[in-house]
Length: 173
Image 1 (cartoon, rainbow, N blue to C red):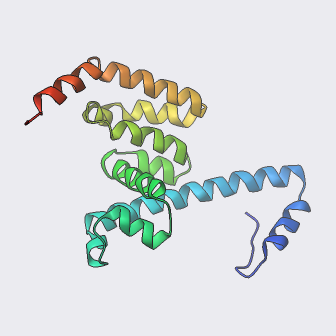
Image 2 (image 1 turned 90 degrees about the vertical axis):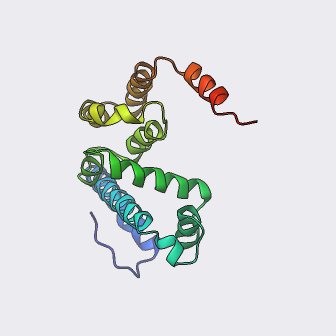
């Protein structure tokens, strides 16, 4: 990665990149992506620990989402995404390691986190993670999404029917 001082202006950074060869730009792009993956993985880890310790309550917030929104000045959608990522790396072995090492990106983690949020399949994810992580690392994102969708379909054969039954069963009116 190109080293920049904290006081460098965006114009200086842009100027550095304009002066690079195509190969240097390609290398820089790849290095920056690996650095971003590592930072995103660390952000998920610190979010997981902070939520476990209920740091949000000590800081006067009602929820982790509110704490993240205020602390990071981010949208509610981004705060939700951070929490899902943190919950996913906290419970699914291998995801955090693969992410931190740059083998998978944030989009792959978000795709897995979406399935982790599904109560009908989340208990089956841990056993499937070695295979899914292999696919996440080697397939293009859209192909990985297709693998996950198919996995989810087989993991939840009853699908919406179970959800409908649960909805009826859980009524209390």
